[in-house]
Structure formats: C-alpha cells, structure tokens
Amino acid sequence: MKIKRNEEYNYGFLDEGSKKEIRRSTLKAVAIPGYQVPFGSRELPIGRGWGTGGIQLTLSLIGPSDVLKVIDQGSDESVNAVNIKKFVKLCTGIKTTTDTHKATIIQSRHRIPEIPLKNDQILVLQVPIPEPLRIVEPKEEVTKKMHAEKDYAPIWLQLYESIIKYGKVTISTEYPCTVEDRYIMNPSPIPKFDNPKLNMSECLYLFGAGREKKIYAIPPYTRVESLAFDDVPFEKENFKGKKCCLCGSCDTYLDEIFNSETGERYYQCSDTSYCREVRSR
Image (cartoon, rainbow, N blue to C red; front, side, top):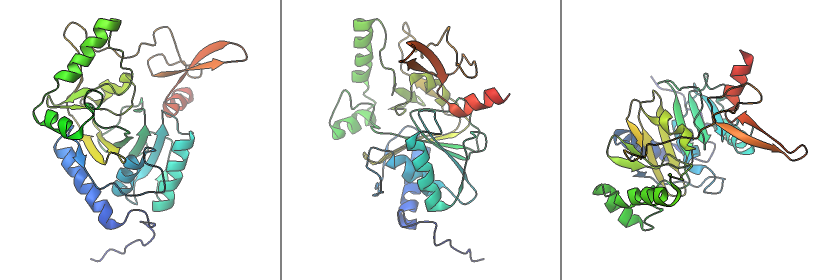
C-alpha cells in the first residue's frame, strides 16, 4: 500500500534525510542512557543557542497525529514558547495545546511539568551545554576520555569544595546526576527541584543541544540519582511557608515576583498549566 506523502510536511527546513539521521542518533541515545551521541546539527532560521537542538528533535519525531505543547521556564505564554509552537505548527500542521495531559510531545526550556508524565508522552529539553564536565575540563577530547574511563573525580572534588566553602552544594541549576550508575549527565538548566522527576519516570526524556551537536536520553524507568555524599545528601529547593498566590499550591516550584510599586513579594507557580488545572478544580 502506497502512502501519499504530505509535500508541505518538511516546509524546506529539515528534509527527510536529515530527520532520519536525527532519529538514528536518538535511537542510539535511548539505547545508551546518559551517553552523548553526536549528530549533524542542521541550520534553522533561529540562532544556535536558542533551542535549535530541541526543535530539531521535535521536528524529526513529530507526526500528523501528535499534539504539541511548548513551555519556557514553565510558562505556555512566553515569547520563546509561543514562537516555537507557531514555527512547528507552520512546518507540520499538527495540533498544539497548553494542557499537559493532552500533549504527546512536550518541548521545554528550563522546567519539567509538575504533572507526572505518562509512557505515551515524550519530553524534549533544550540544552545549551550538554557536557557536565565542561566546568572542570574545557577540552572535548579529555572529557570524552573521562567518560570512557568513568573518571569523575574532578566533579566530585568541585562539590566537595563547595561544601567546604559554603557549607552546602551551591549548584542551583544543571545539577549533575548519574544515569544507571554509569554516565554523569547534565539534566539541562532545570532547577534541582526537578531532578527527582527524572528517576524512574514513565515518559521518555530527550535532550538536544544544537550548537554542541549532541543528543542524549533518559528512557522510561531508568535510575537517575543526583550526585551527593553520604553525609551531605542531595537537597532540592525548599519553599516551606510559601504558596502560590493564584492556586494556593505549596508543593510546586514557585517563582518569586516583586511588586516595585508596593514593595511586596509574592509567589506564583512556575508551571502555568498546573496552576490553571488546580484553580479549575
């Protein structure tokens, strides 16, 4: 049976050959959790460093029956989220949504939704710097060797020095984690509040770095542990005593908002979809 090809589907940005190459790299990334797979990053009408890796993954994986949701730091209405959504819709003609439950593919920058994702959903994260060892070793050939030999002493030393100097680990975003007791991975610039969501999740996490030309993945039901010492356990952000001014939630990641006119500070759910859902109840 011959399938009629939709000529408008590629829209001149990613051809079928490019999509196939990206999908092959994605399959390898899924097969080796946490391993950074090189791929031929294509040119898109967006400056590299602005989410081209995530967009290439989304355009390569999305199909006519998919429903897309795009968020930027938890918000559906930010400039980045709205324009990426428009761009993908223009290229593919697929449906879009702001409801996390209805989306089959979610592209995100800096956040993981508060609503637990299911095994029929894919979360694509935009990544500026995929290499977790870059902060301790600038040379690519050296970091590759360190991953191969599982030589992660320098990054443990960095955590130790932070504890000695400040009494705690001061990393707030891009907190490194170990995948299946093998590779140390950069979970993208998500707050460490979101790190526990990576562990044994039902959904597939895909990470795309367009400028660095790397793809890596966390398949469903994969063990992911944030780096921590036995006597200094991992701690995520604490919002004790604070709650969302709109929905009243006190167990979500909250953004602090300062009103310059009144001098008041108040808090609001970073995840706008979750906040709307709680209010609708």
